[in-house]
Image 1: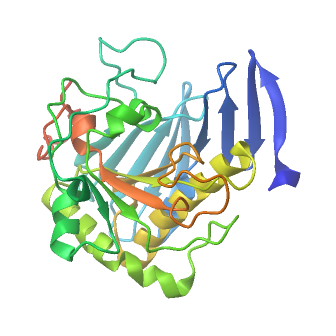
Image 2: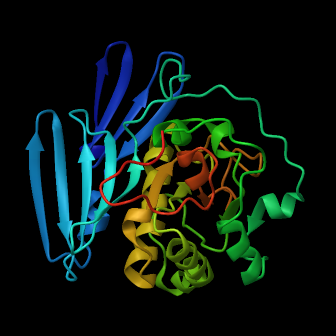
Length: 303
């Protein structure tokens, strides 16, 4: 990957371009990675169409049953909307990342205090290798730990840790990534079965449910390498959930965080820190309505 990475300076920021990812480092030291998850939707597709309208690019993935997944991105490659259209033309807007709350200030970082968590720690951050299936299922459909005061965009959720932390999460420590690798070994794939069952149950109950798959690394290697690596680990998990367990790709989104949020405070190799985390971000996207039903055909989610 190093040989394919290109480093440039744009507007005071350092930008690292990889074939399928962009890593941005601000002068303040903040950095993040933005990937392109469209290839996840190619699995099992009957046809793929691309349209450019104004400054937006629409990729339409047609599935064998005639349904379509429409992904709209802006001129900068940022996801704007993701829509599911059934074979009769009825649409459900799953993600509307173009929405900005009137109270939003500046960029996509939201400065919130840490949430007040009154539930037991092992139910707030669930260890997948220790929890029984019923706890996994409950966590994937659990409400926020405190009242959500507004609706957040997907980018605000991705780049604001205290926004994400308002939702319980599941740490999938049972998948052991090798140092420097984002591949999930075949003998470990089955460890995602219970997670996949819980995801499918939640999506069946609410077709607009969205789950964030987070990737994390230990502190071996550079921070830029680890951002890229963690994003690939998250995408590997999302891809496996779709291809092996039939979790709808459009209800998953992934993001890598590199070495920024370790569970174990060590500078060297750590299997605990090389992990994937899953959380239901639906209430954050819709303003706290955890069980929001699908809207009527052709309508946008509540503002």
